Image 1 (cartoon, one colour):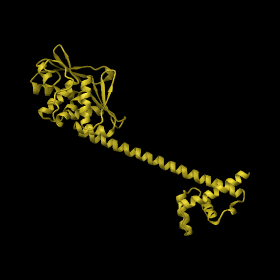
Image 2 (cartoon, rainbow, N blue to C red):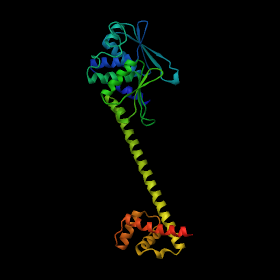
Image 3 (cartoon, rainbow, N blue to C red):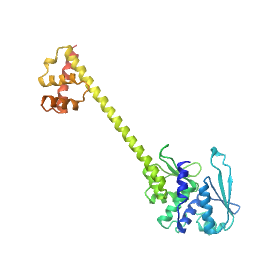
Image 4 (cartoon, helix red, strand yellow):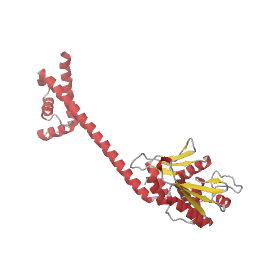
Length: 310
């Protein structure tokens, strides 16, 4: 079962007030219905959604909803559930703000459908049940989308989402419009908005795991880079020391710099910080990493002079 299906199954079982039911039905039917020969036709691949929509229509409008199952050959998907309503069609479409009193399609529902936050949440739930999907955060990038045919509806739904600061974007596609969210935090907020709380917990668990894993990887990469730098620095210092040995030039260094040279030979893999701590501990004379680096700079300068003479 896909993550999207789990979300839809969860929110399809939410108990609602009558006004919330109207808002959810409006969101679903405005983004799903086709009107053919005076009938309202609805389709879904989800049995739970089919049962929910038919039950709400029957309860609120006292109409018979004919449900037919049809094989869905596209990409071996689940069967299609075809819902059709023949009675009170004009009244239902006007009541759910699909059409106006003249039977013309509304670009956006009337204010009584989405008059309060709970109704807005229900309307968005209906839109998602009809045309929404969210990638499983465990297997893919963060992505939530709603595919909407009507341009007025697409702009309206985008505005509803952004009432809640979700930063929803609208994209014109070959067939209709796509409203989408890319930010993990905003997708999580959307799931809370439509009351998919089990999905929120799963999404957040996966997100925290990914964040922790990425943080660990960054730390490991940083640690490896630092280690590589330590090895490269120590290797270069040993190379300069070898040049001084070959040219009998060590005695040209002052006593403190010779001391640093001796400790580098003794501890060839130590970082400057580690070496400064070792020298301070063993000699009882405090030396900082910066001071030690200054001594190795003297070794390098003298070694390069011998190299230049050669």
